[in-house]
Length: 215
Figure (spheres, one colour):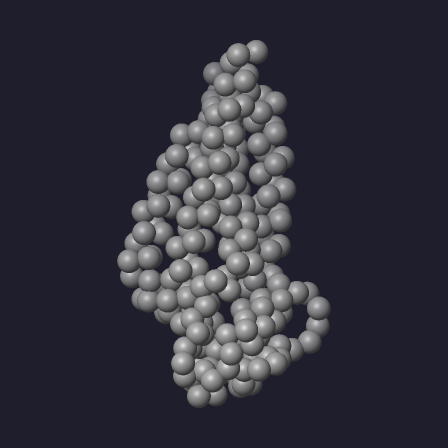
C-alpha cells in the first residue's frame, strides 16, 4: 500500500514538473519569437530627428547585441547613447542570456519527461494541470497588463541594482522609441503567444491520448 502511494506521489510530482517545464518553455520560446518581430511595436516620435529606417537599424543592432554571445560593447550608428545606457543594456543582455539557457534546459527536460509520461500511458495526468496553470497565467498576465506601468517599475527596481535604466531623453533618445506603449504591446503579444503555445501543447497531448484509446 505504501509502495503504491509512493509511486503515485512520484508520478504526481513528475506531472507537475513536466507541466511547469512545458510552460517555461512556452514562456521562453514566445519571448524570443516576439523579440524578432518587435520592431513593429516601435514608436517613431517627432522629437527624434532621425529617419524611421535608421531607428530600425539601431534597434536591431540592440537586439543582435542582446542575443549575441560575442564580446564587445553596444554602439548605435545613428542614435546617441550615454555610458549609463550602455551599461544598462549590458545588464539586460545578461538577463537575456540567462533566459536563453533556462529555455534550452527546460525544453530538454520537458521532452524527456513528456516522452516518459507517454511511454507509461500517463499523459492524461497532464491535461488538468495544464488547464489550471493556463487559467492562472491568464489571470496573472491580465493583472499585470491592467497595472502595467507599476509592474514595469517594480521589475526594474528589483532586477537592477542601479538607476541606469532611468534614461534622459536628451542624451538617450532611444527611450522615446522604447516607450511604455512599446513594452505594453510586447507584453500583450508575448502573453498571447505563450498561451497559444501552451494551448497547442495541451491539444497535442489530448490528440495523443485519443490515439492511444483508439489503438
